[in-house]
Length: 107
Image 1 (spheres, rainbow, N blue to C red):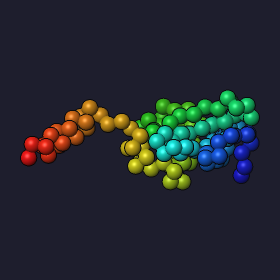
Image 2 (image 1 turned 45 degrees about the vertical axis):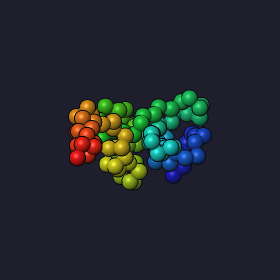
Image 3 (image 1 turned 90 degrees about the vertical axis):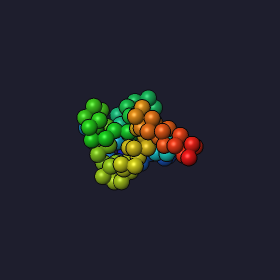
Image 4 (image 1 turned 120 degrees about the horizontal axis):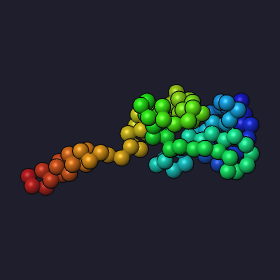
């Protein structure tokens, strides 16, 4: 299977077609893995989303990017590690982390 439309990023991994669109996964710099749906050869004709979605968030993205997410996860391109790495820590997580650091300093 080959892409229908031109895509200028050599780091993107072609995932397949869905709804007449090309789907890609790009881990361009390992900090912002991205899902992409391209629908023409024009350079600006695409939608993208950072691949930080998990099973509960996947319902809020477009159906085409949802399929890209599921394919990328099935191929092992998106893992729980990727998802946890991408989601910023909550205030509680930061507070607990800081408490732990303070204990080490005062012991």
